[in-house]
Length: 189
Image (cartoon, rainbow, N blue to C red):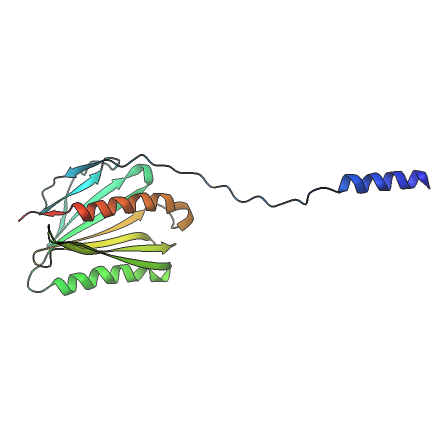
């Protein structure tokens, strides 16, 4: 009996211990350098501040009455696409509706869309920033206008399949750049 009891008791003693706990998935901790800005002076009817982390802007694209600029961030695999249009013949309502509709197209994949109004009376810049949460194609969109002559819209896109958890750090970093663009827009009269 002793021969049987000793192995059984030793199994119980070895088997007793802490219950195994599942380990959480590890994610890469991404930290980006402090943003430093410089004035982007281009052949456009406005200027703005851009992050020095972005590539130098090489060209302005034109399509009809619209002009576009791509602010590329190769290290973050992202681009902020800027599109400028002239306000004329009461087309402001149409431009505003188009900018808002572009954001609303992301509601299919978005968990939430927060709107942040922007107003700079001194430089006559008024607009809206849309912060898109979830696995949407664009994490941030915005527009600014002087309501009389100028209209600028922008969208942030990543060169990757949208996965909110993965792109969140880069998205937050670039959201600050978008806010800086909005705050620094200066219309050329």
